[in-house]
Length: 431
RNA sequence: GCGAACGUGGUGAAGUGGUUAACACAUCUGGCUGUGAACCAGACAUUCGUGAGUUCGAUUCUCAUCGUUCGCCCCA
Image 1: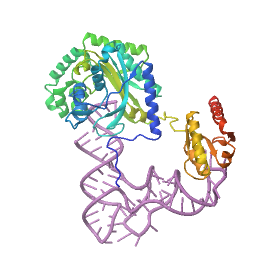
Image 2: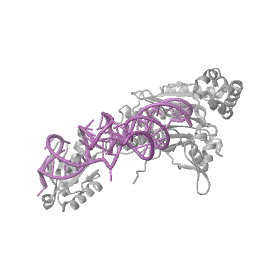
Image 3: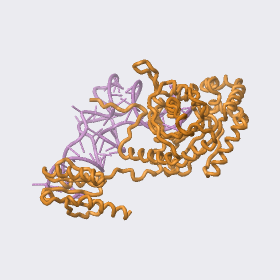
Image 4: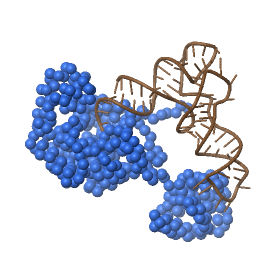
């Protein structure tokens, strides 16, 4: 039979890598919980309109990167390309803004899907961790989200994370700025790239993101957002900078930072990290403030702010920099039966050690040589081997062997758990 | 969507237009039917991504196709 392979752009996570993912995710969760966030799990599938209206029609994600298809009832569904829009839909639909104190603080982990060309640090199905803080417009709310993200990256062991921030201004600022850009690009757009032409129509702000060398000089001369910011937006951005400084969070202002999702307004930011090997995975995380997203989805006028991390990118960076220690699976005890009669007794003891002792135990079901069983115990990183043969069964005992020190002793079965408790507590105090 | 490189066992890999496809690790078996990382012997690619072409003959050359990886765009 022909082997069926995985879908392009997806990847299997197994073995030690699974432990790395779990370690990273649980650390992110526990820090988000310190910041009073609660978990939320929106569905992977949403109606297409959630993202068209949420993420925005002019975004590349909606225009060309979504997995969208009709189901058997001809409803147009989309595999989420990001979490924020789906979470807003969840909050609006379940009226969480009315039954909870605001800001509503939510965190999430799970897979997202984007139809893109796979390459370094980029997959079609990948995992994101992120948070949303909804319903409070204080600049301190934006600040705290940045602090949380930065804290998580530091706790993972990353040093020298760069935080880039910028402001897109409020609705008025953006409208005025958009007008100014349209006015400026009106005479140049004919000579610019195809992407820019469609950006001109859909969202002129995105032209600033263009990397085509021929377009750059034109873009350099474009009006700057700073000149079109309302007093309120300007003050807001300054308050955030002040707060970050007081909290000793390093940041740099990057005026070219626009973000590809349409819902952002006011503060936007990205987290960059270059691994020591020099590999550049792009941003490991990014986010921003969104003023009108909830209204866009039929909800009340509540702003929010959030970020998301690319877990694959973070795991890769940690692996490159050797920050993923102790991800090997280990075993407390490996049980080795000798002879036909011992297998059942061994299973009984294995179950006892697991259920009553709380130890991580595996055993050998195969009839094989003791030497082989020792080899298997070593491969499984077992701390102790437990041998049960005919002689041991005769006098209700087992042999315990410490696989690192090679010490060996004979123990009665009913003293087994006490003995292991003693051995393991001794081990802990030594460490 | 565009551009480039690569595609040999479970893994890491050498290799050549000609009939046994190195080597290493891993795994399994036996030497050793109750004590392991050692040692020795053996097993392990109906075949070199797939299809077609050139050739007396192709894993090796050509083309196509698929896949992987990297870059651009964009993004986490």
